[in-house]
Image (cartoon, rainbow, N blue to C red; front, side, top):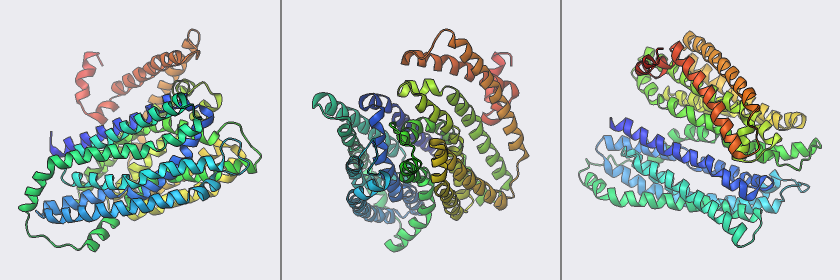
Length: 534
């Protein structure tokens, strides 16, 4: 296995495991604090994620690119100078970000919660935002350090620190919440305010891992530095200018989803109140936290495979091998749809069972989840199309297209929420993303003269396979309804396993029989199909 493939595999595995843990922990946390309180968690985390994305989204990638560039020239001194300066800069900007978020938590809470809000008070939201803001002191510093290791094509520190950060965060979150509720007799809202501090504690765990790898690798890096060619003596100002130019599009790519959620955070409750749709249920908490966690599962399944193809696009485009660029784009779009669409359809049909297993039986929760799940296809499409724009040196369009989609979301959100409640917020998100993705694809088509009848034809085939799968799933659900209901979480798990298994078997069989699976993932699959007489 080449160093590049091995590094990419390590990084992808670490990120995937971290994301999975980020979904699974919500089950015990939800059971402890309850449906009526868990929404408070997202009132803190959405502003935090947005602030964090603005602070660090592009930094590790841009930093690793800069370090790798000068390392390839034999100038290891320049990367080390930037590391010292960068870590100090991130410590300073992290502390400033913390102060801004902590001091402006009150005004931000007043923007998101009205005084007549039935579920949470302004003080509840203010306190939660202030507790989570402490993580901003540590996380930017940690992210830049990860970028330094990646610049040496050493991906293990990033992967391990991401995983340990998530494990420490979850252990602190669940352990702290349990202690507040069951040992000290505190309230669920107090438990949540304590739980959001877990972001800072988890980051400290990630930093400890990076420090371990630094101690281990420092002698090697010092030796490289001692044998470095004469430094190019790049000024820090020029270094940061180069990093910023590269990082800005990556920042916008990272904040796309938090920005759309932030629009909901600012407008949803006020729009509902203005329309007289006051609810005892935290609909925004369901939309932006509990349902959103499940919606992101199909996105994780697909983007890892598709994004692995993006470096190839950069390579082929640079060499003017346009036929290979077209073939790679065809494969990326097909894999994306092949994996995401069946996952979305299957999860939509099993939304009652999924919401029960992760949370509880809730007609409102499972309905919002079912309506929201199709947006996962768009959530997967945007980063892939935006990454392609990066690969073909059209980064500026990422910013323009995202801002256009976001402007439409902001424009339409309030009137649609007043008319259709949560469905209105989902519709505004769909419109914003469809326009942004459409503009991305238009730029790709014009720049590369890219038109693919193959993708259109295969999309039709994928839709046909999914219709057949959906019919099989529906039949399995009707049959199972006679024997197993939703009386317990175990019953729901059994239903998911059986019905999901039927859907996966039908989709897998038809995909192999039609040959599309072999065409997308390689002819190696043929030797397995022959064993079953296909």
